[in-house]
Image (tube, rainbow, N blue to C red; front, top):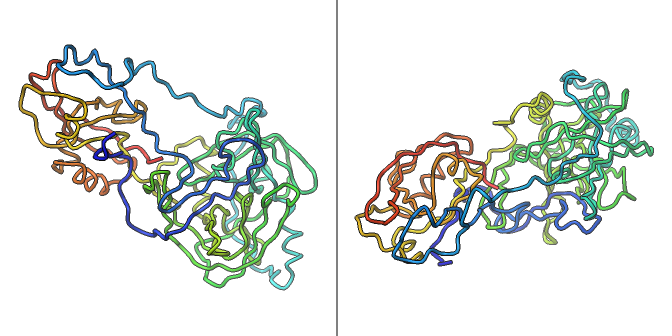
Length: 435
């Protein structure tokens, strides 16, 4: 591929961009490639990759071209993406059998265990657990979780902990073990709700993360590194509030910005999904990220519980999480483009008609909203959301002004089958979330 091509998945490169890595705090204990012990680089490495599906337009669409088409799939309808991780062996779960959680937003502020860390641990650890995930013969990985609704058997954890898992097992520190079902999971906020067939489990009370102050003492409970260390407690303080952290993909592009609590509690691979707890024994955050670098220590991040609760309610109700204070997903179109002349030269196309400035679509993800709306390979995009597109940079600038989920309209020029003429059309679609 020429160096002039460009993957249009997200373009916002501003914000917090330190030159070191982030790590999802899972712990990979098998041969699964990646597990969730994956490193996120603010500029570089990411959990997951850019989902650009190369080559989706049938050569027959263009008839007798005076050039040889590149090696692009001959029938895009035959391309499919299979789901991974059916969790088919998990116990049957029906939302109709369970009521919505009744969160108590009145923390037990009259209880002060700050002088007795052992007391906090004894009160809270009984509701915490190890989340073990197997991957259909390809190893297993572990994370952490905690019960937030004992009546319905609901357990909170991170999305990346259970992502792509085939079987999920929850083990409490006293040895109790349950097979779990995913009630709902959201990759943007990195939150998931599990269900276990158990009643009257101990549960943690929910605090108010909106009232946190820097310097407030907190503890973290989880299973770092290996299940032999299940039930580890670490202590620290709230180091920062409302930190905007940009998460990037393998190409170094920002896929989302998360607003998180910073703490100096020791948070390690395996702590993901476990609770961050205040000195009254209330959950105020869900441990999710840490800085992964030998040059930096004790810089971890947790999802604020007050915002997380709103996501939990939607996941339990089976609703789509279309917005949250926790994370804002960057937009993507799902295409790879060239500046027009570069693209025509690369593909050996010799139009016999006039054509506009813009960007030529080289590849398109067949699962993207733009593809479903009618955008095709070899289309020339001339306008994006009312802004003129003359090259890749202008498309990048226009895209950066929007968010995932927004509806946009683009103007495109499409050649006819013999490249002797073309026509303008408009296409309207919702921007996908970058991956």
